[in-house]
Length: 189
Image (cartoon, rainbow, N blue to C red; front, side, top):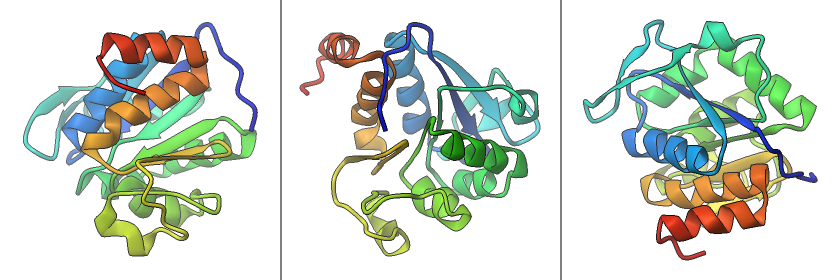
């Protein structure tokens, strides 16, 4: 996959009741710092989502409102039972299939590579990663913190969310923007 820095890239982060807070907010924050327009969309039918540790997050919209929109990136947070709800959302799965087929970026972190991507044949490549407890559910599991294979990006969990976010900024906006974002976050890369 070749990536070209885009001046106004867009990203969709779908969330559900039970999605992981740190992954959701960290990915959203890092992408926004990188100049990416991020839409947080609830698959739970309501914009207010109760996350895995009880925090409540207000989504921008519901997934049905995004069904016909095009995004440069769709990235899924993990968390349980949030990943189960993402897996069971036909609108989201259809969007992810179109993303994969069109060669656009998509990814998942924590439980979502195993729980969402793998069951729907969306986990591609010789290597992918996920939360280590799901290693047996990810074909060709890699212990790398972030894995990029073609247009599919996977990461391990809350502690790797910032690293994944910076990699996504790099893929969408280029090396210089990613380095600037990382420096502003005091993240060594």
